[in-house]
Length: 323
Image (tube, rainbow, N blue to C red; front, side, top):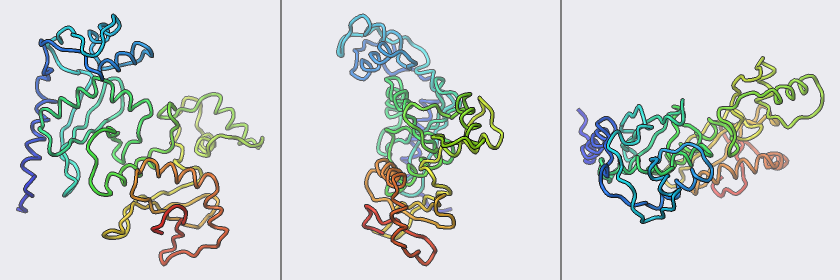
């Protein structure tokens, strides 16, 4: 048997403590006790009162804020019972490898049917407390606010919380970028998953009949060409217009390691491009790459007649000193 690293027993203990919270009688730590209105619960109450919508916050807190309660004011004691029953089907696991091993919980939420969420815990935190901290975050609106502009799911279909533990090294950046290209581009507030509407169907049929230009994305037009009808699901919009067959991976070694994307583009058939991401915020740089390509950066690059490397890849050269 291969010996486990020193931290494995502590990690398993953390996982077991978290599992006991999610699988046992989930009684809130403050059930039946005096409590005061916290800032985050106050903000979530105001969101629900002003905008409506679903929330996991208890009704007594919302009613108290509606009646004028402010942070620090007393609240009615929480009723005994299953704390945050909206969170269901929890599966507490250890994910990652080597230095990236983390306790994590996969769960569903009744307000988001069909979606599977994941949350990674910081390894140094005590299990029971950190599990209840996650439930408190969900109760005070973190999950609902995140889903106003939902992140892309990973390759297993999991949407990871944006406030959970980051993976070490380049793994977090790799996962974020892979999820973006897998899930496709979604404008904030756009319907997810996409469904073909009557209006869009009519527009696509018009274009397929040869009647001029359209602003519809290629994926929608091709879906209608293939027989899609109104109310049918649509494939994701490519994260970057014109880009296909993306392959996101880590290349290089030691201090030269970078998250890299290899891709094709419809305007340059037979050409395989590569782009190395800098080491800063992956979200910002994904957007930067999208803006560059959609505003003609590849066209400008190909005007210089660049040479491919020994594997046939033409590397981008803008805003990247590592190419």
